[in-house]
Image (cartoon, rainbow, N blue to C red):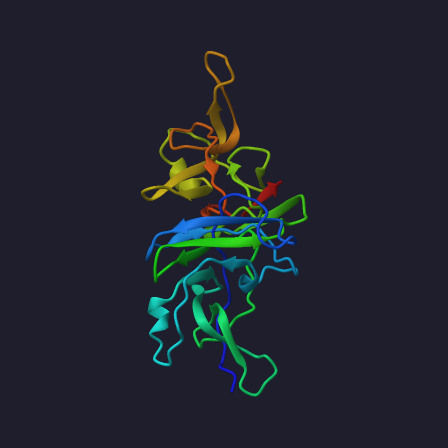
Length: 266
């Protein structure tokens, strides 16, 4: 009998691009994951067959065996994808069940739901996920095709949300490769209130997060004695930044007074 399924899906890490085994695979990226440590990751590839199903994109993870007692939920590698409420969690098993047309079905390694069934859930482009390798250190790899679209827009809601570059590239804040649309910035003012009022991007750092704010009057050096100001992502001192989000790195956005959109360009 087929096991009951529940949950949805997620994504993984990245780090560079090159041709790998299949001639149909146009690129791959990988991210080192220390045992037991949660990472915020993003993916920028599509499956060669189309879509973004995690079992067609993500490899390089050590599996564990399914057990009826449910021990595997504590011992298996995990992907946690944001859902309407909380997260949908998937586990990497050696013996995930799938329907092969026979009465008993069959098993193979892959990402599974909490009942041990292989899933066909898909990564949402531009949405980041939590990833944790529980059995050991891992090199999580995504391989596939680079999205054909030249641009993609990612909606950022009011409040905190996990987001990612939908393309497999590093990207700098305030560059033409990532622009903010329909965003309401705030003024630097006295340098205190804006940290609670401005839209935010928070990028994971060695310890905690590096936080940037969208200001109407971010300062930059234009070669003059006083400098100049324009709208953009700024540090806590009100200076425009060129901080880089690495390949495959997910991040937090926070719409404070309302929603906004990030437009990514190859």
